[in-house]
Image 1 (tube, helix red, strand yellow):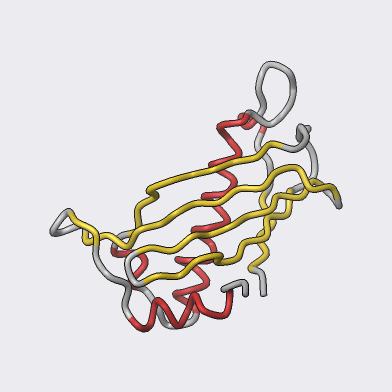
Image 2 (cartoon, helix red, strand yellow):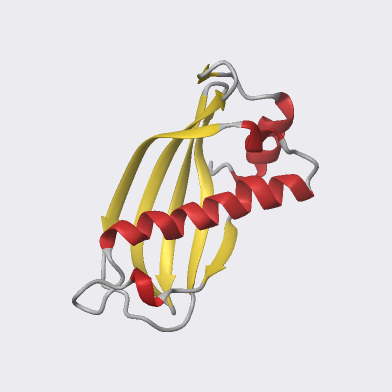
Length: 133
């Protein structure tokens, strides 16, 4: 199962060549991830992700340039789920064309104690349906 997010492009996303800047891809992926883990999780009754999640790694493959225009579609799923970290994978589509693939390793984090924490059962239960097998 994949979480799908449609993200509008902004004029400020473009670089000097008229394409979405490579760094802005991470912003688009972030918007999709926040929609899943904060908005989607909140709707499912899980608000603890909002207490702290940090990115420990990003990996991005740029497959084709994206021009300014219609919103892009980002599909997300969980590739790896461990009590202390999980990996979110993404595919970004411009229309029907796959434009980029990425993955982020995320670590639950206790902002008050300034250290990593373990995921709660509720957090793991929320993520399990998105886990690819």
